[in-house]
Length: 408
Image (cartoon, rainbow, N blue to C red; front, side, top):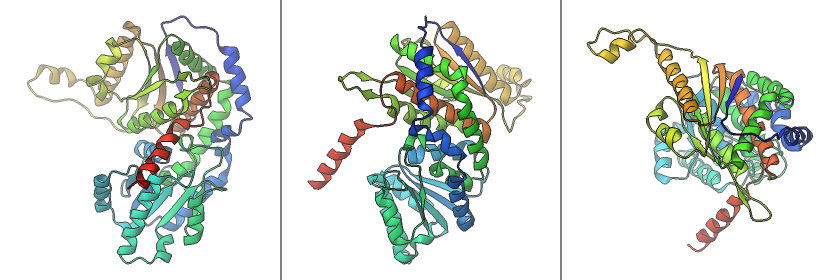
């Protein structure tokens, strides 16, 4: 993976601080989003479930936040099994829930319920609906274990307790890995396996690359770029992969960046870098005008895929000047031209941008991108003197939601 940085401001030297945070992070239990990738136990849990339920046509994932965004990203980016159908209960919209239920053959499904805490209200609500649907279709409660698999914290989880009571297998999510960092744990590995993705290659690449990042000049330079730009008012980050298959990668990054770096410090100071999802070339026709000529408060992340699995000739015999010009090229030529054209235009407008270039979109390269951005997020947070692994700002809303329910 190649990383290049285009910045147009004066940078303060932050290398000493960044190096210190990287060094300290190696012994931090939160580093397990890298170190646990080398433990086959978590992969084997998924292989065992796959062996048991591989014949199911539908895979249904029930989860919200990191329990859905990461798995959706893996499946949309790398899916090879096009016969199996995937469904994600990632919200509690009643109309959407009805449409999902109508599209699923529940008796030919594996339903994967994921909650790290074991008490996520939205996830439990969807579980209750799906379980009720099965029971009403004639499935005995004691047979729900033939349709459901859970994933939760191995030590302290009411969902795990419920699984034990119902005889439902519960996969372990490592205790020190929070939801938004959990995509390469069973949270994402099980749906990936059902999608035909090589999870061993994912984990091997992620582990090896993660171990190498502590010596990486790219990690230090990219962290420094974000810190320096934030000090000068660049408090927005645009993520723009030039790949439709990586559109969900942008949404995954949004949660990672927003929930980790948007914090109120002990002295009441508020800090954060707002992520904006986009993808090329589509958003050149929607958001690019703002990116180019709007306020200079944004750092752009571009992801370029050098080689696609498919390509199409644009040759034609139509009497249209633009079609005649395009006829000499391929579809890949066109998306590449728009990527390189955007790079040049951003440079002319002095819009800072960081480009990640991968040879092709596969398990090895996607794992590198995932681990790089997880690592970058953690180190950036520590350099800002905040905890990138908590999310206290969402707790009050949860409390008030239940207060409202109690008053019904």
